[in-house]
Image 1 (cartoon, rainbow, N blue to C red):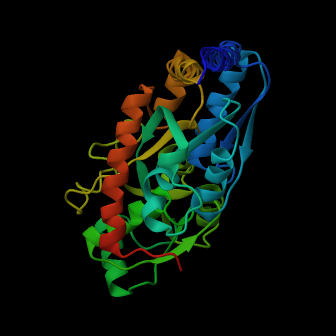
Image 2: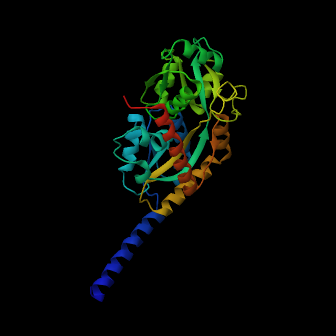
Image 3: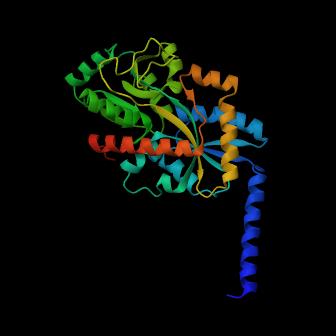
Length: 324
């Protein structure tokens, strides 16, 4: 290769790199789409909308929340994975699509670890073991006794196969020695609505999406899934305290973008989200709903997602969870 051709190639590469850097520096210059892979009303949607409003105010561009529910969160995840790597499509996701589905769905179009870049963990939150007021169980022990007396009679709702509430229930079944009946929905919101209406008797739901119904008396919270009680509901015991020793699970919400997105955009997005969730009013609202703000680095979040994926893949295998 001649020196002239080499020089031209180097110049072209430099020009391309400069153009990418310029675009990253000017980001954002148009509206951002924030994809939520579940229906409106669930915990992920609640968190996404709280962040979106503040992000819009701070960046000076529109931030539109787009609910792309279906296939246990896989439809929305695929939409984000197929978007350009320019920072204008942001995925707000959780344990299901990012840590469980790769073990559960054998024919995923995309492995999220290969196509999506972790930006930051927004928050972690306990799940609540909820029952409708008509269920004759006021404690975890009574619920377990009811489930053992009538195997597969108790139906539980979830946001779909592989969702946080699905995997949390699978772990509960394993550790409590009970067998329940799964009713997957297109999101936690619709499942929670059916629980409130008495169409299903129980479900594990994220605390932010359910605490209002618990405080209002519409639902009974029998336990929280974390190792410690939730400050927002100090009267509700942990599952470990309530008769399932060693049980621990949590819901979480994080920001992802398409792999290949400029590091400068990732860093700016992470910085903005971390700032937003630590604003006094946002932090207070998150904590009142039982969510713990995090805002860690992309590297820390990537390590967290990897550990979650390893943990829950073992539960999927042990519980023999399969897509019907």
